[in-house]
Length: 190
Image 1 (cartoon, helix red, strand yellow):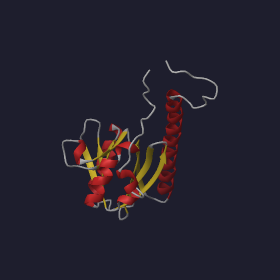
Image 2 (tube, rainbow, N blue to C red):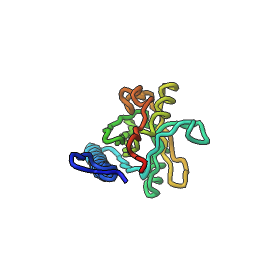
Image 3 (cartoon, one colour):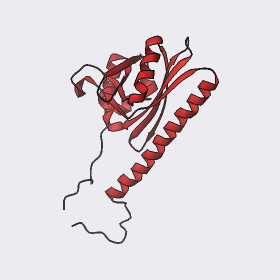
């Protein structure tokens, strides 16, 4: 059993995880609050707005699955699927903006898909661990594009959007291509 004694002021692994959970919870809530504030502002300006908090967001690449699809896969709640499909069916959404924040090994982002002609926008909030990003970043840099994919929990594909600027999603993208998690000391032998 490991010995602890005077001067052992480092928090243990469980304390680190608990602290990170609080940081992540607060960062996610701020992301959702920002999305709602943006939605209210756009609606006040006369835009049709569909805010979606993804139940799960995964940065995917061809090495991670059975398809050659890459980009962010956002799993949306069932009650948002029909309004999403209706907006996508009638709009083109050629423009986009990305708002992001990185906290304690996670990326929290809000993707705004914009159809300026129809004055319609889709806001998708998502978050994911940075350690899952390298494969996507490498593929996106190689292809010089990145995608947003939206699907339901049962994997029904609802829509995909191509983006031509990887750096909007990953500023300084090369810092993510070699990202590794340092597990030293996490699983100490007894």
